Amino acid sequence: DRSIKIAPSILSADFANLGAEIRAVEAEGADWIHVDPMDGHFVPNLTIGPNVVAAIRPHVTTFMDVHLMIAPADPYIEAFAKAGSDMITVHAEAGPHLHRTLQSIRGHGAKAGVALNMTTPLSHIAHILDAIDLILVMTINPGFGGQKFTRSMVEKVAEARAMVGDRPIHIEVDGGIDPATAPLVAGAGADVLVAGSAVFKGGSVERPQVYGENIRAI
Ligand code: DX5
Ligand code: ZN
Image 1 (cartoon, protein in one colour):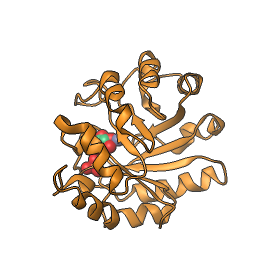
Image 2: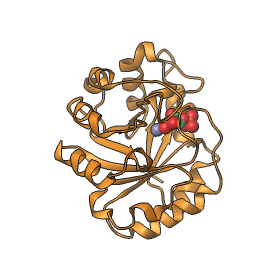
Image 3: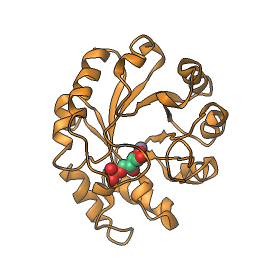
């Protein structure tokens, strides 16, 4: 379905060649570029900060979708916005005043997303939908690429789609998306599919056509 966007997660790219990797996946059909900052506290891994996001910004010609796995997120919103994030998604579990955080994101000129860990119910955000541009339904425990998709999240995606109705809110899924699991979540109503290992596996900046094959297979 061409209305489904594929957002390659550069967590699975070659970090020594991020600019070239981004240009390659965009040339091969990526709709958005998904970026995964992690703080070693909210999740058990450390990845990239706002300086790296700013450095890759000129290489992104589509849409830079930044998924913050940082708690608290508030002190870093300004830096990630100034680095050029188009969407800043924060975890619902990352602070006590989610609505304030979302207002801060929009106040800095970015779109505002909310990620829900698998154990966080949709009811958490049911009453603040006007403040939200994207709901990210996690289908793994965040922290690492290459983990196994959690089947029971398909129902959560369907419930998110029903809750959103005709509001202009994206429903994104992240974790274990591949050619076998993508149709399940797309069928349940997700419109943005993050995929890291399934896009980058087998390819490289020297063999970018593999990325295209992988994207078209999802
Ligand atoms: C993990 C990140 C994901 C990760 C997905 O915490 O949020 O974006 O890169 O990787 P795959 O697609 O390999 O599960
Ligand atoms: Zn992510």
